[in-house]
Image 1 (cartoon, helix red, strand yellow):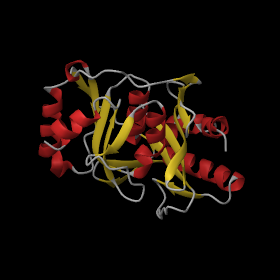
Image 2 (cartoon, rainbow, N blue to C red):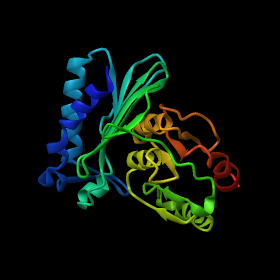
Image 3 (cartoon, one colour):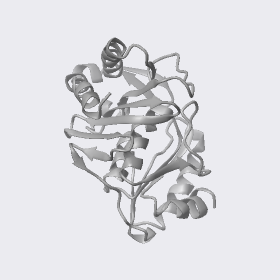
Image 4 (cartoon, helix red, strand yellow):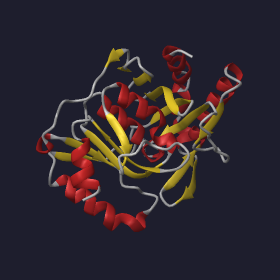
Length: 256
């Protein structure tokens, strides 16, 4: 499959994502964890198209009960709405994230925010794009001049003291911090130079599937907090940087 083909498929979800009535149909899955009819409608729509056009590829998706992935199994990794809480509150910072996992790695990725009409995309070895303009990470290596995005790990509120101690540590060393509520978009913002680094605990494969490729194709680096490649069969603590800041975060922030 070509990158532009996947973009065309994902763009067809625009009307579904922007359906305000369905965004108000909310069900709680757990602590600070919600799903709307939009999540299900986008998932069902894409699943139908992908299974029809590419019947040999399986699907891993946030709102699907059974999710398994193997190193030899080609798999779509889908987050139908990354930033569901934002969607519920009409914050307009949510995205459809779809990546293709082949032979142990992500080879194709699209992250689409219809509210801003921005499409981030990448194919393995072919660079990363924002609305067909090539993008790259920043060359910032001075922590005091960085803009950092962090996630709050809202599903594990009992870890708030630990998480916000980390926030304080980062805040004291950078220019400022942002919390966006969408890991997929945070990864893309590092990729296009709007952010210098993004980090968050306990992310799921669909949070970083497509975005991880977009970031690396833009010249960035993404690992877990032990500097190991991200896993796609379990949750990970994610560190995504412009590459120049990676060792600093590993040595002085997340493992200090």
